[in-house]
Image (cartoon, rainbow, N blue to C red; front, side):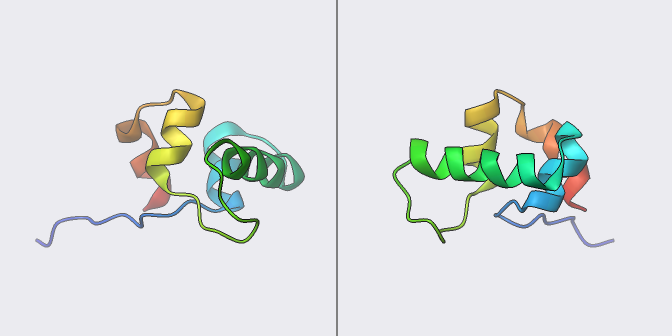
Length: 66
């Protein structure tokens, strides 16, 4: 059995699954995370950055990315 590897980036659909927010709310959250971490508007947001921003442990996020 091969080990499960999750992707390093998070997308609005993932945030929708995790938080129950709408797509628009998820996109706004990604924009706020980019602002917090001084990223450009089209830069990827990592799972680690999302977890630090929301305070949700990474091990709880991983199942939503599979």
